[in-house]
Length: 425
Image 1 (tube, helix red, strand yellow):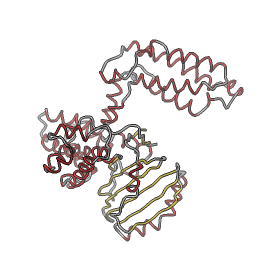
Image 2 (cartoon, rainbow, N blue to C red):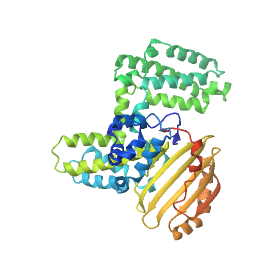
Image 3 (spheres, rainbow, N blue to C red):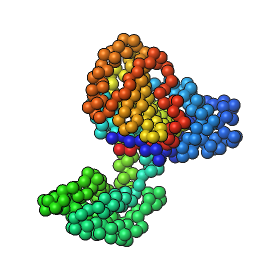
Image 4 (cartoon, one colour):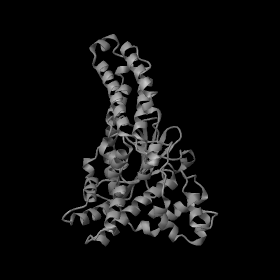
């Protein structure tokens, strides 16, 4: 499931490398720049604007307006088209670059959509690269937290053998193996000795294997089948621990390498660097297409930052779709608002405004440019309601709005919106 975590913000760590910001500031007039900041130079403007989270200040609003009205971004077209163009260009090589395979995988058909693949595509779309790197944890720190969570769950066990295992677990957590583990390793790129990680892995494995044996024990189940040992929380935490519990996986460098190997923006940056230093026959064309795609991703990053939202492009190939993007915002009291804006090849603009509250209650506003398509949607509303109901979602209202340019359903709630976001699996 895709969750919106409002305790973190998508932070643009290197604003001087954000192509979208550079484009906006270069095209802004002296008067507009004056509105952005009291400072007179570019550095002071950046320091004012790009904080950990947007504060909805006059400067933020001015820059957001400049971003949305910048002609360069209006003429860039869709990211899907850019991915297709770059993919076709890369396929012409006798020995295609790794980026070619990545783009081919990224352009899967929307008919093959699934919750797992959608989560992966959004996470690796490039929009969250800096955020993931900033908030990445040293794997050993992560496994320590998981073990702490497991120990807290097992405190309520009534099974003597499990109580003993939990005592051993707490002793492990307070041992020297965990004593010096922190995220400083990630920040300073310090390596932890592999022998230490190997010993840690063995200790953790010993504990988890003992618990798995107790879970499989018919005797323990007959004593108390409702014990926390057999709970979903215990099973879920053990599963996460087992995924991390190998010496090589506990190395920070491996985690960062895996992260960068999947993220589209990271791969684009690496490929750009490699091609720039090469004598590739299509060098200029490739760099041009990579720059264009990078600029589009940077645009969504900056738009997300300034509007305190999650601005996403639709990461699927769909013959009927010309362009599409999704904006997600979270308000107070666990209310979520989502705008889905699609430009259909045959039927023109389609906008869906979704409001989710009380966990599973959904309101939908629909605007369609084509009257014909609006009737098609109305004829299929009962099917939509049934499918949503089967997923545990109750549709309270579905409204059709006359004006496709009407105000977004959540704009009146901006004062209640929580600041910041981070997409997590």
